[in-house]
Length: 80
Image (cartoon, rainbow, N blue to C red):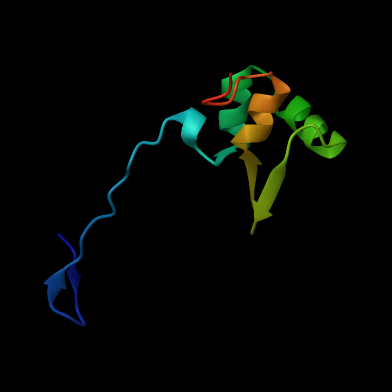
């Protein structure tokens, strides 16, 4: 157990909450590859062509999950 020296109290570990893929806002390029069965190169090609939306934070590229759903014509939750 690690101790916070400024407060002399134990440091609490971060709690990871599992969010189902369909409900996530973003995913990594590797997760996008696994989810739709395409190569990294093809994912980056789709990003460059505008078919898949992404954002970069620092050096990390995140794919917007709704754009992957649109790409494979996945019905949105609640859509009729």
